Length: 349
Image (cartoon, rainbow, N blue to C red; front, side, top):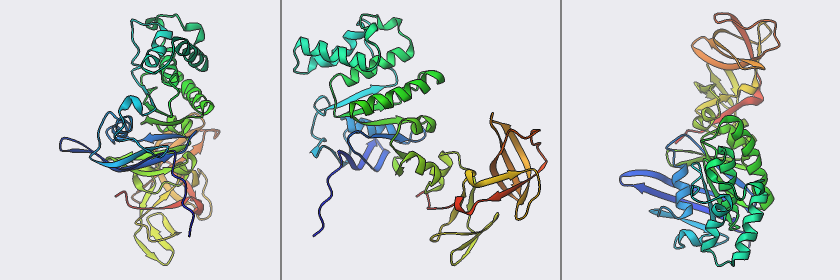
C-alpha cells in the first residue's frame, strides 16, 4: 500500500462563488506550504480578490473546501481563522498613532496589555518603523503607511497572511523597494502568504509560486521562472508578454508545420509558442534565417523591441541596443529560431 502524502499547510479545493447571477469563481484550487508565498496573478476581474475574500471568510462559497493545517475553515468565523489581512488602501485609523494602529487588532485577542505592547514593538521593529511609534499616521508617506499596515498584520502572529494588491497605490520606486522588503519579512517570519496582484513584475519579485487566473479559474500554477519559460496555454503565454503563438497547420508524427516553418513537438498541440528568448535577430542575412519586414521598432534601453512581418505572420523579437544604429520600420531583418524555445500549448479552456 502506498503511503498517503501529507496534506498541504493550506489548501483551497473546488471553490465556487456567485455574485447574484455572476459566477466569480469556477472551481478554483490552490495550495501552499508553511513559509511559501503564493501569488494570485491575473487581469482585473479574474477572481483574485474574490478567492482571497473566501479564504478570509468575508464571502461564503457555493461549493468547495478550505483547510488550514488540516482544519476545515468554512465554519470558522473570520476573526478565529488565524489569518492576517493587508489591503491596498492601508485601512489605518486616522485618530490613532502608529503604535495604536498596530495594537488595535491585538485588543480583540486574549492578551495582557504588556503582551500587546511587546508584540506591537516587535512588529514595528520587523518593518523598520520603531522610531515612528508615536507618529500621527496622517504624517506618514504612502510607503510608511504600508509598513504600518504590514506590522499590524504581523503582530497577531497569524498562520496565514493575505495581501490584496498592497502596493497598488504606491509609486513605482516605492513599490520596487517594498516588494523586496515584504518578501524578506514574510520569509523571516516563517509565514505562509497569499499575495494578489495584476502586475507580473511584482509577482516575479515576491512569489515562490504563481497561480495565473482568468475568468474565475486558475489556469496554471508554477515557479516564476517555469511560468515565464514554459507557459502551458495561449492565455498564460500572452499574459507574460509572449506574442509569438502560431497555429499548427498540419502535423505528421512529431513534426508540426506552421507559418514560420516546421518544428519537432511533443503531443498533438493546436498551437506553438515561439518564445522571444529563443529568437535570434540580425540585420545581416544568414543561413536558415527567416526574413521579415520591420513593422515597429521600440527602444527599451538595452534592446530594441521589434515586430516584424514574415508573409502574413507578425513576430515579436529583440535586437541588442549596442548596434550602431536603430533598426528602421520597413527594413528587412533576419531571425533564427532556437528549437529548444518552441513550446506546445494546450487550449485555454
